[in-house]
Length: 136
Image (tube, rainbow, N blue to C red; front, side, top):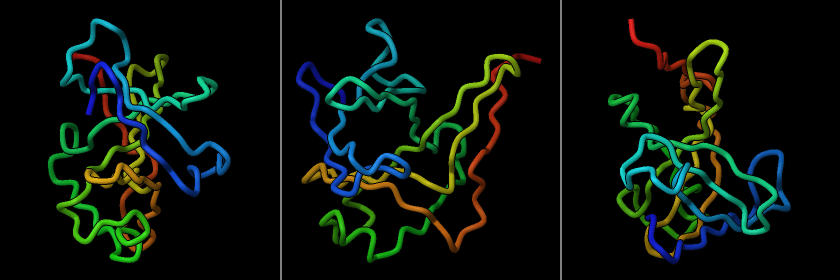
């Protein structure tokens, strides 16, 4: 989804806690980061907000969120095959780890680039799944 002319992702309802921020692009964390980097930035078009995100299966291969059909419909998707998922990440340099929000992923319709954050209320996924980045 990264390109010289990034695709605009439209979150019609904003994201949790920021309902007025509705348009974002997905970019590399740094200009020299590889295209398949573990982390990316979800950056608002106004430049005021950016957050680190990841595709969850890299760190959690067994992650299998059951996104309700009603949520898929809200972004114009007819099946889970029409979407990709990114999860918000919180960095903790002091502890040498990151936390991935598996409970509240961002879903993106790959055809229309409509997006929304969903809360998987019926799941047992944590809002803070720890990933240790230090080597043992």
